[in-house]
Amino acid sequence: MATFRNRKGRWQARVQIKGHAALSKTFINKVDAERWARQIEVEIQKGGYTNLVLAERTTFAEIIERYITEVLPTMRGGKADFIRLKALARRPIAKLNMVALTPQKIAQHRDERLKEIAPATVIRELSYFSSIITYARKEWGININNPVALVTKPKNPQGRCRILDAIETNALFEALKPTGRRSIWILPLVKLALETAMRRGELLGLRWEHIDLERRTIFLKLTKNGTSRTVPLSTYAVQILAEMPRNIDGRVFPVTHEVVSQAFNRARKQAGVKDIRFHDLRHMAITKLAEKLPNLIELSAVSGHKSLTMLKRYYHPSAEQLAEKLG
Image (cartoon, rainbow, N blue to C red; front, side, top):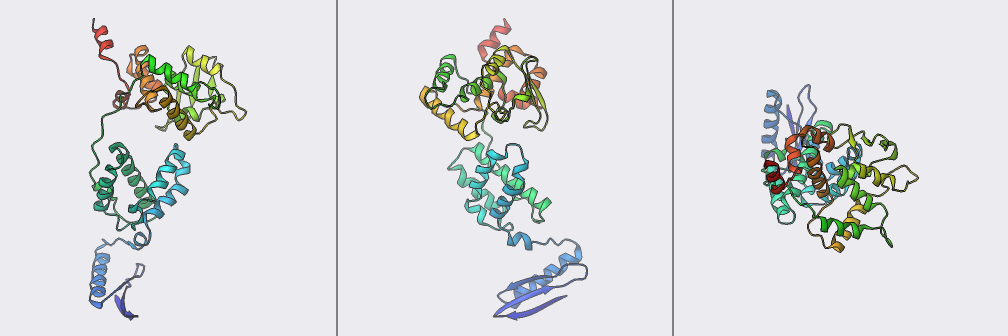
């Protein structure tokens, strides 16, 4: 049953039903308090009541911060996501409590962000939102429906197809040579990325015990898609690794994601190479490997793609090469 009492000019409604935790809420007038109490009683009796108290008391920023602290350290690539999620926790939408986080608010955030960043980045942010909210519902008792599911995502842009020609590649290599204050690790990192099609995270997580130069293989225990993979090495890839210095802590490339990004961007500008990202090296490598491995099953075993649809996004043969094969 419901009880009501006036406290300092406001009406507090309290609903107590056997077998359920007591619920209370404060209103400006008694009519609203009575209306709320009747609605709660009906919903509980019908078995359709959802307790939103915790969701009302918790902001989206608090949920993001808890996710960063408790979940992110257990995830592959968590270090790269840390900066992005910290930035999202400072956005205006993060100040809302979880009940106020409606599809309309998510859509408003989407439209505002589309004025600032690329559609692909907005899609990634919405994916972050959805994952965090879903985890909070399952693990932390935040009883709300996922509002992201009701929001239209921006149109997925066409996959990038940036392939450096020989002149651009040589210019980039020249700008990465370890002279002066330049790192000795970035040039072999870039060359190995082009030769193996390995992801940046896979390369930076590589340790010498993972490498067998005699068998010409690299064993990756855990990759982005959640499985292990053995990467075959070309003769040139073996040469790159054999000529590298050994770091005392066992890492092949003892540098961070941030150091790689800064060094790569500096070299790109110095070389005059426009519109190139480190991840484009993977596209280039897979395209080159496809010339040697026309069998897509073999190619996907090297690249680590489970889906041939995803592999197709990375494989960019030239029309001239295909015309030569046609005869």
